[in-house]
Length: 230
Ligand SMILES: O=c1[nH]cc([C@@H]2O[C@H](COP(=O)(O)O)[C@@H](O)[C@H]2O)c(=O)[nH]1
Ligand SMILES: [Mg+2]
Image (cartoon, rainbow, N blue to C red; front, top):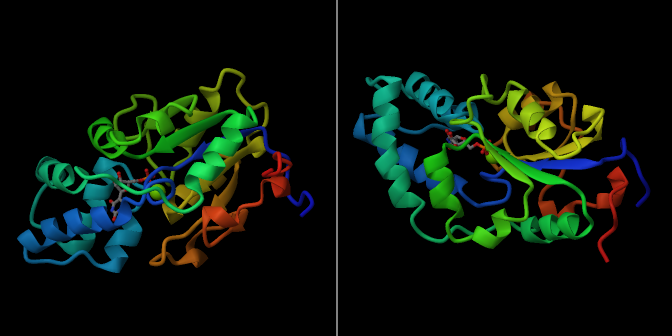
């Protein structure tokens, strides 16, 4: 296929639900938390929480599920539940390793912009040390002092772009891969192009991505003037 979009020089990946199949585990942990307080983790709450920082996610779940606790309490209590669900090996999502390896071998600068906390990032990445070394840098939005506002604000993607050795001159030359509506809004607000791989539960009418695909496996790098797969 020929080039259709503005040529790309740098790529920034989301992590949860995009590279790693962590969403079922978030559902399990947050579901358990909601049940503890006599509520349930609804689809509406999940859509609101996905992609947000630890504080943003806690606020969304407390509000949407009417939990009788504070944000600090939620964050305190969910820590142990996350530790349990993220303990075991987490699978990659289809096409993730192939695309990251390909960009790395093609010398395209790559980074990660995740809303995770340092502590949960450590748990989730512990079986994939070599994979995460492929990235030039990894921004963890919940604990990074430069990220003032979490997704859907553009901060995390602008910071990720500016931490490359040779930052992009024009944010249009940055390609973001995201799974959540909040993440897509953040990438677009940063002036970047965004490929959206929406989770099944996602309402894709809520954000305007550059391109929507069912899986990373379906991504054709040449659409964005990136080197073709061999
Ligand atoms: O069902 C959920 N999935 C994901 C999240 C939030 O989304 C973040 C992952 O965002 P990202 O994919 O941008 O790394 C998680 O750390 C968590 O805060 C959530 O609240 N609820
Ligand atoms: Mg995500």
